[in-house]
Image (cartoon, rainbow, N blue to C red; front, side, top):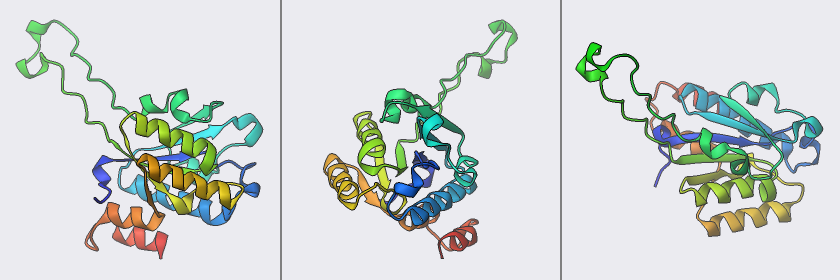
Length: 201
């Protein structure tokens, strides 16, 4: 099963200035997050961010934050506990306003609500805390979760790898940023292929 760009949303967890110095391979991890966010914007993949206690840990860097539709400031470790799940659902359809008799027939019934994009491409820090708890809650809410391993980090390799083991056991798929990019694009004839090449090659 490949990742479908039309079913995808990207969630970027806690790429924050005061966390970065303590994270393993931080420069590569942050760069992969920025690459994914740039490509997601070009492909109209909704992108969301989170920040854990930003008054203490700082904000996301502009090259990541600027691609997010919204950034959730949170104190809970799982972003789902703070409302991320609601952001990932489509807005309910609004019934038309006005006197029903004055409206054309096609406006007299509410429009069907947009389809939920159930594939969540998830990356962030720390892999064994905020990222893992968010991923497990998303799985509980019946989203498909794809964890981008080379865009995730923890302070120690043991914690990071334990998170991957637990997430895989719970049903999350483990991928890399380049895997996501090539599955979103699918063909060298795609209009965004050259952008993707410039980001990942």
